[in-house]
Image (tube, rainbow over all chains, first blue to last red; front, side, top):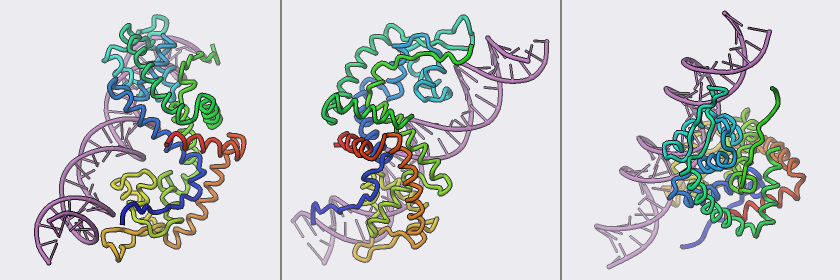
Length: 147
Length: 147
DNA sequence: GTGATTTTGTTATATAGTATAACTTTATCG
DNA sequence: CGATAAAGTTATACTATATAACAAAATCAC
C-alpha cells in the first residue's frame, strides 16, 4: 500500500486558539530563520536592532522590557551585537549605572539591508493571508489576545 | 519622578506578523500553563491525550507527526503519560515494531475533566477576541499561514 | 528465499530559549 | 549617614527542540 494516510480526528484542536498560534508561529519563525541565516540574525536580534535604530539612547532595561526579554538574557544579545560591531553600549553621564544603546555606522547600514530582507519575508506571509487587509485584521486580533 | 514611561517607537514591529504571533502565543501558553498547573499538563501533553482519546490505536509515529513532534522527543511524553496511568502502549500483533496508543480507563476520566478546564481557558481568549466569530476568523487566518 | 533497505521506537546528546538567584555598582530615600 | 532600590552582570537550571546512531522487525529487489 502507498499513499494511504491515516485520517486523524483532531477534535477541539481544530478550533483551539493556542494550537493554531503555536503552529503558525513555528512556520513564520522557520521562514524567518531561513531568510536571515546568511545575515546571522535570530528573531530577537532583529527586534533589538530595530528598536535601537528607532530609539537611540534607550537603556538596556527599557529595550529588554519593551520586547519582553529578561534583562539577564538580554546581556548576551547585546554582547553579540556589540562583538559584531553593529551596536554599542554608552555609559550614561547622568546615571553611571545605565548603558545607553546605540547603533554604530556599520549597524545603521546593516539595518537597511536587514529591512529589505525582512520585507521579503513579511510579504510571503501577507500573500498567504490574501493581502494587507487580512494582515491588518490578523494583527488586530492577535493584539486583542494580549490585553 | 514617577509613572513617566518612555515612549517607544516600535517601527515595523507594529505590523509584523511574526512578532505579534510570538507575543500572542506566549500570552496564551502562559494562561494554559496556569490553568493546567494543578493537573500537571503541558500543552504537548494535552494535545497528545486529545489525539489518542479520539483516535485510539494510532501508532506513536502517527500521533507525533500529526502534532509536529519528533518521534525521538515523543518517547518521553508517552513515558510520562504512561507512568501516570493515563495512556498505554500496546504492541501491535500485525507489526511488532509499532506501539499502538490507547487511553486507560483512568485516562478517559482524566480527559473529561481536562476538557472542562480547557473550555474555561479557551473561553477567556474567545472573550478577549470578541466572540466565536472572531475566533473562527483568527483560526482561519492562522491556518493560511501554514499553507 | 536471501540480502539490502526501510520503518519504528529508542537512547544519547547538543543547542537554544527562557527563568531565577545572587552579586556589584550606583543612585535615591528616610 | 545608613538602608533601600535600580541597572547590569554572572551563574545556573530547566524546558523545548533537533540530530545522530542503534536494535528489532518489516518490506523490497532480485
